[in-house]
Amino acid sequence: MLFAFSVAPTQAADDSGSVSAAVADALRVVRDSGLPYELTSMFTTIEGEWNEVMPVIKAACDAVGEHSPRVSLVLKADLRPGYTGQLTEKVERVTERLADG
Image 1 (cartoon, rainbow, N blue to C red):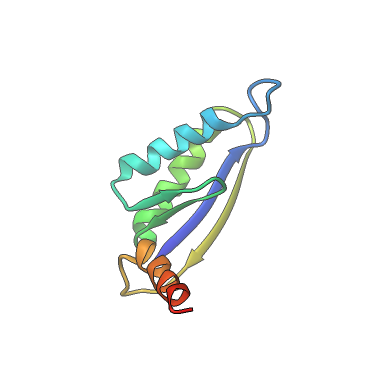
Image 2 (image 1 turned 45 degrees about the horizontal axis):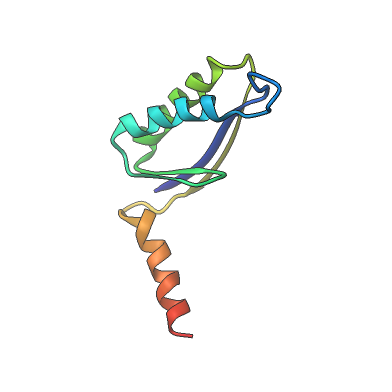
């Protein structure tokens, strides 16, 4: 199963508006989980089962909460039990179709 999420503080630490320090702390949690993941400019996608991924997302939210009293979370899931490796295989299937014309 794939879970795409975006977690950020609702207030930046300074006048620059950047939330990168908080997002980096959240990503450390994801990285340290050992689950496959991909970081993009807007979301982090993590692959695993419900009981593996949800505690990681909660811990990532908690890490961001250290930067701000309020945290925003956007979560989207592709619930397809029994499939693994979809973090890359879904992209490969589309890329193959594009190559076909």
